[in-house]
Image (cartoon, rainbow, N blue to C red; front, side, top):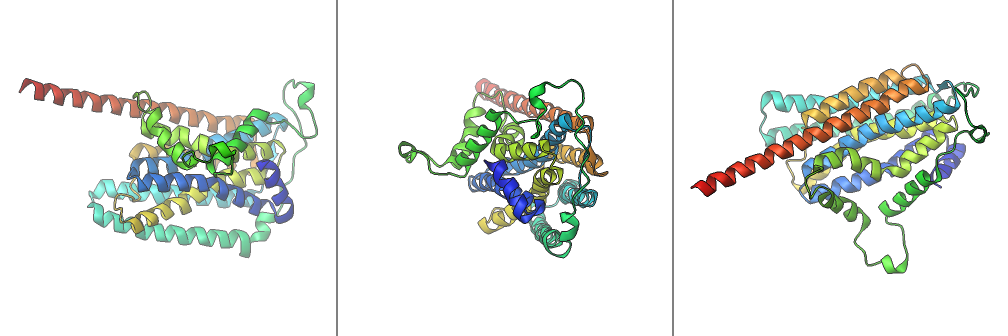
Length: 355
């Protein structure tokens, strides 16, 4: 349903507008989760979920788009000028997070002073994103409207006859249905009457983090960085993969890469401004060093993949593998931190007992 709506909008308003709208509605979930975390005083979860959304869209979604598209086409092409513009925006997005974080760590800036610096930087990033929208939708819309030359379908390997259809590979119904149901849950669409008294879905998703991490196997940071972005944007992810399979790569990139750009240059600064309005000085642009490092590597690899305006399944399999490496490292990093914290608590208890 969501992918159908995206394609219909693309037919009437162009793939640029369609991709932007799909990314915006998908990121509304991230904004809701971040706002709830901020209200609850869980700034770390707020920051981690936003970085996780960037990584998920840039590596997992983009990788799946190109990989499954490559099962139908030996090589896919997309607008190279748009791809280079997106690469530049991604580089700025990475810099907007790396530079403040390094500055904070190197100078040991007091929280109040660094918060003011973050708010000024956030205002600049919001202006940059506004200028990007004007460039994309107003002054240079003809560049984004140019259609890339499509390569003919050349399936690789031995493919079963039922996959060789005019529609290309079909996404499993369970994936699409799960994405649609997740969208209806997250956007709080009306359900059956007996469910009217249930807690709001956004709060259910946020509060489930505590339930998942209660036994200590998974940390809140790992859930926020890896699991929450995947679940929260399931419908958007399914849409991007579906249109990529149909060789609508400009639209797929508009959803996947455009979503990452929007989170980095719009959502993160917006959340900083929201924190400003709430009087929360802890919400700034100083992120975890591990998260900043993996984001830099993710942007670097993604820029290499999209820079030439062409894609095939192997290069984009690398994106998926990088995401898997990040997920494994994140799991063990936060697990080791939890174990160390538990040991410190045990030592404190032993000291008190001895006294």
